[in-house]
Amino acid sequence: MVCKNCETKNTQDAKFCKKCGKSLVEEVKKEESVNLINTVKENIIGIFKKPIDTIKEFTKEDSYQLGIIYIALSVVLFSILMLVIYNDISSSMYMFEYYFKNAVSPFRIFLLAIILYLLVYATFGGITYLVSKYLYKKEVNPKELVSWLGINTIITSITYLALIILIFVSYKLAGVILLMSNTLSTFYLYKTIEVPTKVEDNKLGYLLFISTSLTTLIVWFVCNYIIF
Image 1 (tube, rainbow, N blue to C red):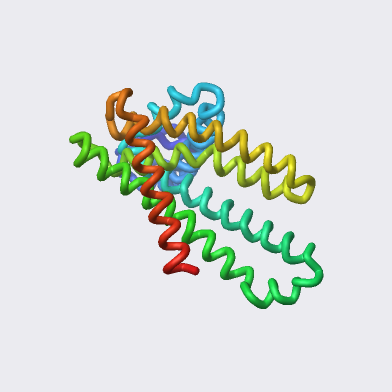
Image 2: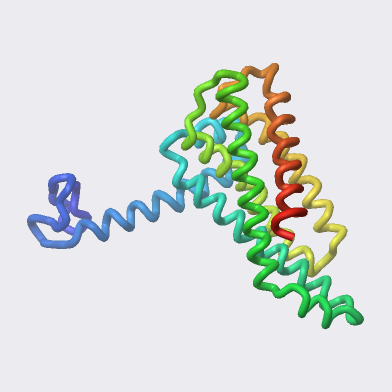
């Protein structure tokens, strides 16, 4: 490890420079932060500029931690979006404002949105894993699967951020953006599912159909009979 203060070479596990005594741990942390920011920028640009290459590069075992960060960011933005929609609807319906404000608290809306979003992703990822492994007999790496789910949330996260802003401008415009985003996400979902599952092209459609259908049924059941 080279000290940036005096350019002295130190051992890889050294915490302080042997010549000037400057902390090397802080330099490592700064470098890691810069590398993380650069990676995020590359992923965001790449998912639109060269999506398939970016997805194949990102969907690796060592990318799962960043994948978790992407999923967490998407969960938070989705929950904020649901809260904004709820507050906008309840405040615009003056006759029912008191009822809405007291029937369901904003905190509960935020919490339910988090639970619902995590339920969808966990269910979809779990079903995809089980179907790939036991029906199609493919060895699926769970960490690669998490990375795959994470890279797919980039588009949705950007969409949620745009919708949070556009809702105050026009619901129609927000609806168009949402429709375009869903179309793009569906296309990428089909293309990315083959990376971690290694399922043949002629079976990918069936895998996506099974995972989507079962996820919809399970989430519908949980929402109707457990959460609400």
